[in-house]
Image (cartoon, rainbow, N blue to C red):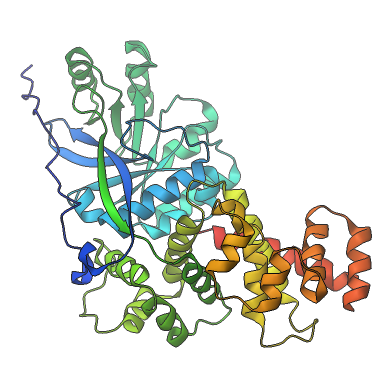
Amino acid sequence: MTIARRPENPEPDLDLQSRAVAGGMTADDGLPERTVFVARQPILDRHLEVFGYELLFRSGRQNFHCFHDGDQATRLTVSNALNVMGLNDLVSGKKAFVNITRNLLLQEFHAVLPLKQGVVELLETVEPDEEVIAACRAMKEEGYLLALDDFVFSPRYQPLLDIADIVKVDFLATDRRERRALIENSRRPGLVFLAEKVEGHQEFEEGLALGYALFQGYFFSKPKIVESRDFVGAKHKYMLFLQEVHSPELDFDRLEKVVKSDASLSVKLLRYLNSAGMGVRERITSIKQALILLGEKPLRKWASLVALTCIGEDKPSELIRLSLARAHFCESLCSDLKMTGRELDLFLLGLLSALDAMLDCSPEDLVEQLPLATDVKTTLLGGSGTLGKVYMLVQACEHADWKTACLLGRLLEIEVARINETYSHSLRWADEVMRI
């Protein structure tokens, strides 16, 4: 068998740091910056042509990661690829393989990826229960490609095998007999087998002989870290954007005002629209038009991705969820507290009550940086008053301290049933926002 010559460098060189960003805005415009990283490893076909790249989370130039929150790692990787580097540039127009956890699968996270480029790679740790199988089928019906990572056959995986497009087989963890059996027992029209962790020429030649169509591993290329400069926006602007985009009815005039007030948001929006496969063909003449062109569901998902990754980078997902639930709970009680018109103040009170941990700063530093109402600042710094009681109420609900919740409810003249209903709804709302 004649083996194609292994290319010395299967990846095209990218100079993402020096490339001007969407809209003609560059680092020279005076925006604060930070460096972001994504690792990409090429996936080659039988002729050693690049089929796509697997995108991997990295927090620095070290070619490994130790970030244990899989949901947040995927969010950060996808956000950096879409909104900072530009997905089409990052993968040179090829397929983008993205690892996905069970949570993100059920939250329809894949919808933020361009349909023509995104390959959803279901991690081997995801159990194929009824919810997972149904979510995969729905995703396939939308037109996305499904890959099964580190696949080891078991009868319970048959429903996923029946709908998968690509099956990745770990050549380090399997022997020749297992590699052959997987193909012989699972072969069907349209199903492609990918040999991953191919470490040498012998494994590559064996994969070719067995019928594997795609290859990935150190024999071809180690993951290559790509870095780029991201414009850092004001975090309170991202908070306002998050609130606006999850209002029951979108107000595009207010949304445009928030986006235009923060240059980093404008840049990210234009970069996202420029991503391949977004379907935007007409010339964009305003931020409002760009927001409308995205459509309501994609807009909510993209906005959540941008805001949550900015606010809670390198922080556990649960901390973000806690802040969102508190924000919605406090905001929802405005009419009960006879504070109609102060929804934003109450929203920020709840959101900021946990953000000092998320932003790694003291409450004093936090309130100094944000344009908050005096009573909101006082409450965040430990003060009492009506907002102090509201803050104590949401904490009582979190700890299932219903005795304290009932007492505070009487002081605030809010019925216990209303408190329970509002808190339950806030948890559901936070989960919805996290389903980006």
